[in-house]
Structures are given as C-alpha cells and as structure tokens.
Image (tube, rainbow, N blue to C red; front, side, top):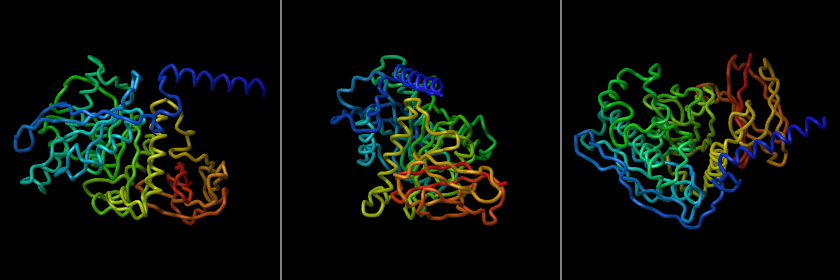
Length: 409
C-alpha cells in the first residue's frame, strides 16, 4: 500500500512538473482570477473583403491585452458581436467589457468585425446562409492573423496551441460554425448549403492572411447555436455555453434552421467532445446577462465554471474522470448501465443539501426531473425507454454541477 501511495505521489509530482515546464504561467491563479489592473487596447486591420453587393470592406478588430504582462506565450480568445448578422459593431461596449474580463486574467482578447447582410437582402434565405459563410471566413482570417504574427514578428506573444473563439448570439453562431462546420465531413450538411459555401469561395475564404494553419482549443457560445447539432465529432474543440431556456429568438433546443446550445450541448456530449453548459431556466435571448435581480447567480456561476474549465484546457489538466462529462462536482452513479433504479452519491456533502436532477435524451429533451435533499438518492426508471441518456445534477445555487452518461438497458 505504501509503495502504491509513493508511486501515485511521484506521478502527481511529475505531472505537475511537466505541466509547469510546458506552460510556466499555469500557477493556479492566472486565467481564473483578475491578476491585472490595467489593460491596453488598439485597433488593428486584419483583412478586407466584399459584402454580398460587392462593396469593399476593411475588417478590423479591437485587441485588448494585460498591461505589464511578461509571459511570452499567452492564450488568445477572439470574440464576435451579436445582431442577427444585420447590425452590430466590434466596438459595442458589451464586447469591450467581455474582452476586458479575459484580458485581466491573462488572455489576449479580441473583438472582431465581420461582414453583415445588406438591408436589401435581409430575409432572403440564400443570402442568410451566404452571410454566415462570410462571417466564418472573416473569423478564420482573424485567427490566421495571429498565427502569422506568432510565426513572424511575434508582437502579441500568442500561444497558438491555446486559441479560443466565441461570441454572443450571431457572433456565437459564427464561432461555433467556424469550429465545427467542416466541409470535408458533408454527411450532416445540406447540399444547398454546400453549394452556397462553394459559391462564396469555401470555408477559408480570402479575407486575409492565407496559408496559415491553426487549431482551435475551445469555443465559448453565449446564446448561440449552429446549422446542426449533429456536426460534432470526437476530437473537436471543447464547447462551453450558456443559453436561456425560453429564448424565442434562437431556440434553446433543436429547431428548423439552427439548433440552440441546449441541443448542441447534448450532441457534443454524445460525440465525446469536452463540454460545459449552463441552462438559464426561464431566460430569454440575451436579457438575462444584464438582469441582475433574477439571473445574476446563474451568470456568475457560469463565469466562474467556464474560467476554470478553460484554465484546465490551457494547462493540460484533467477535466474530470471519464464518466464525468462536465462540471465541478464529484459524483458516483451506479449501477450504470441499469435496467431499473439509478443510484446517485455526491462525494462532498459540503456543496449543498438541495439538488436538482434532470434526465435528458440524446436530442436534449428532458424526460425526467426530480429534486432531492440528500447527498445520496435514487432515480426510478418509470418506463423510460432503453438507450443513452445524460443525467445533469445541479445544486440549489447552480454553482456546482455535473453531467454523466447513463444507460438504461
């Protein structure tokens, strides 16, 4: 027993040592706490292209980074504004504030331009898809800008192994489709969409900085979605999201045209993609982000849990045991598979004594829900069909949660 404990201790030490050598900025504080009081901001042109009417447009971005930072390899997060692909600007105050929250933690944070649909084409279904393709092309060009910089003058000191993208609403749709829409995997892409992508010059496009390859580490979706939740594949970038369950602008679950974060989350889990999701019960499209009276606890919990999740990705730390898909709660579910009762035991009783549980099918539909006041409880099957499900457990404050795969035989 002593030898086993000694071996585990040495293994833990070596793992920590290797991680520290790989990324010396992983000190336990950076990326999860506000280390910097001041930031710098500059406007940079990253590319240029033409809109659907052929009008030329310079593509610019606001680059915000921590002042006096001495780390030489820093994570990058590129964010896109919302506005239904019809309106919005990179300089919107909420976008600058969002970038600031990352910059003070040690990121280089960026708010980008992307091409919007001309008013005269708004509502046209082909143009609606085409402008999304253009937005993807522009975001990819902005990523390539920083990869090019890292391989040449290295002004921004970007760690190209840790590139995150994200956005709000249409910006989140842009980021998700930039990361997960792969025209080499056409099975879940309608032929009409593929035709529009080809007409627009392909996913990479020609908005700038050609030839530079990149890999995305994770995606941050704030009230987003994408063409189809079935686009996820094992090995894809990690996926973090928050979405109001009563969103009438971009439906939370599966929906004709675009699947919301609720459906995408379940699909990501089923595909084996690392994922974190916070549903805002009763929340609308974006109003809950500023409704401090009703939704501040859940938004605060998402900020904290997503910061920790991203820090673990950057520092190559274990996210959770294999059967813990996402969350920050150590939980045991047994027997699994089961043909009757599912037992749940929460390891640390200090988290809370009030628990909410939801059982979701693979489409994201809730098939059962219960509340408990104990750290050990049981769920009865109650005629639920055989198959794969996802058990989501959350405490009353919504700041500790976990999601586990469960199987009913």
